[in-house]
Image (cartoon, rainbow, N blue to C red; front, top):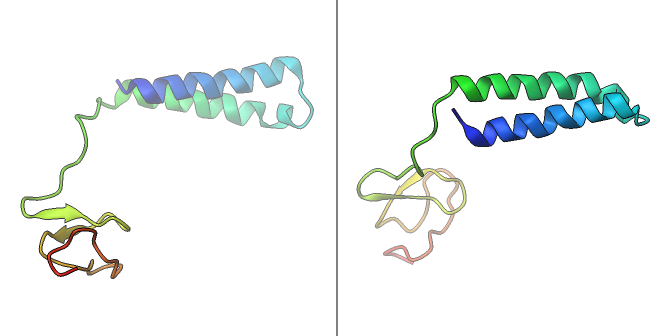
Length: 91
Protein backbone atom coordinates (compact mmCIF):
# COMPACT_ATOMS: atom_id res chain seq x y z
CA UNK A 1 0.00 0.00 0.00
CA UNK A 2 1.30 3.44 -0.89
CA UNK A 3 0.34 5.57 2.08
CA UNK A 4 1.15 8.93 0.42
CA UNK A 5 -1.18 8.14 -2.48
CA UNK A 6 -3.88 7.03 -0.04
CA UNK A 7 -3.68 10.26 1.97
CA UNK A 8 -3.72 12.36 -1.21
CA UNK A 9 -6.79 10.46 -2.42
CA UNK A 10 -8.58 11.08 0.87
CA UNK A 11 -7.76 14.80 0.71
CA UNK A 12 -8.88 15.18 -2.92
CA UNK A 13 -12.00 13.06 -2.42
CA UNK A 14 -12.82 15.00 0.76
CA UNK A 15 -12.42 18.29 -1.07
CA UNK A 16 -14.83 17.09 -3.74
CA UNK A 17 -17.35 15.87 -1.15
CA UNK A 18 -17.14 19.12 0.82
CA UNK A 19 -17.63 21.25 -2.29
CA UNK A 20 -20.63 19.12 -3.27
CA UNK A 21 -22.23 19.34 0.17
CA UNK A 22 -21.53 23.07 0.62
CA UNK A 23 -22.44 23.93 -3.00
CA UNK A 24 -19.51 26.30 -3.36
CA UNK A 25 -20.01 28.28 -6.60
CA UNK A 26 -17.91 27.04 -9.53
CA UNK A 27 -16.25 24.46 -7.29
CA UNK A 28 -19.47 22.41 -7.20
CA UNK A 29 -18.97 21.73 -10.92
CA UNK A 30 -15.72 19.95 -10.11
CA UNK A 31 -17.01 18.02 -7.11
CA UNK A 32 -17.87 14.80 -8.97
CA UNK A 33 -14.50 14.59 -10.81
CA UNK A 34 -12.68 15.32 -7.54
CA UNK A 35 -14.57 12.58 -5.72
CA UNK A 36 -14.01 10.12 -8.58
CA UNK A 37 -10.31 10.98 -8.83
CA UNK A 38 -9.84 10.68 -5.09
CA UNK A 39 -11.58 7.31 -5.14
CA UNK A 40 -9.35 6.08 -7.95
CA UNK A 41 -6.28 7.23 -6.03
CA UNK A 42 -7.42 5.35 -2.92
CA UNK A 43 -8.05 2.16 -4.89
CA UNK A 44 -4.70 2.48 -6.70
CA UNK A 45 -2.89 3.02 -3.39
CA UNK A 46 -4.27 -0.27 -2.09
CA UNK A 47 -3.18 -2.19 -5.22
CA UNK A 48 0.36 -0.79 -5.58
CA UNK A 49 3.26 -1.90 -3.41
CA UNK A 50 5.34 0.53 -1.38
CA UNK A 51 8.49 1.85 -3.05
CA UNK A 52 11.85 0.85 -1.57
CA UNK A 53 13.99 3.96 -1.24
CA UNK A 54 15.54 6.24 -3.84
CA UNK A 55 16.69 5.06 -7.26
CA UNK A 56 20.47 4.70 -7.49
CA UNK A 57 22.48 5.22 -10.71
CA UNK A 58 24.41 2.26 -12.19
CA UNK A 59 27.95 1.64 -10.93
CA UNK A 60 30.37 4.21 -12.36
CA UNK A 61 27.61 6.65 -13.28
CA UNK A 62 25.75 9.53 -11.67
CA UNK A 63 22.53 11.24 -12.63
CA UNK A 64 22.69 14.43 -14.71
CA UNK A 65 21.94 17.49 -12.61
CA UNK A 66 19.66 18.87 -15.34
CA UNK A 67 17.83 16.01 -17.09
CA UNK A 68 18.35 13.01 -14.78
CA UNK A 69 19.97 10.67 -17.33
CA UNK A 70 22.91 8.51 -16.21
CA UNK A 71 26.27 10.17 -17.00
CA UNK A 72 29.70 8.56 -16.56
CA UNK A 73 31.60 9.96 -13.59
CA UNK A 74 34.49 11.22 -15.76
CA UNK A 75 32.31 13.03 -18.33
CA UNK A 76 32.11 16.82 -18.10
CA UNK A 77 28.85 17.10 -20.10
CA UNK A 78 25.68 15.10 -20.41
CA UNK A 79 25.20 13.38 -23.77
CA UNK A 80 21.47 14.09 -23.82
CA UNK A 81 21.13 17.72 -22.70
CA UNK A 82 24.77 18.86 -23.00
CA UNK A 83 24.61 20.21 -19.44
CA UNK A 84 27.90 20.81 -17.62
CA UNK A 85 28.15 18.40 -14.70
CA UNK A 86 29.18 19.83 -11.34
CA UNK A 87 32.52 18.47 -10.12
CA UNK A 88 33.19 16.49 -13.32
CA UNK A 89 36.75 15.39 -14.11
CA UNK A 90 37.12 17.68 -17.13
CA UNK A 91 35.39 20.78 -15.74
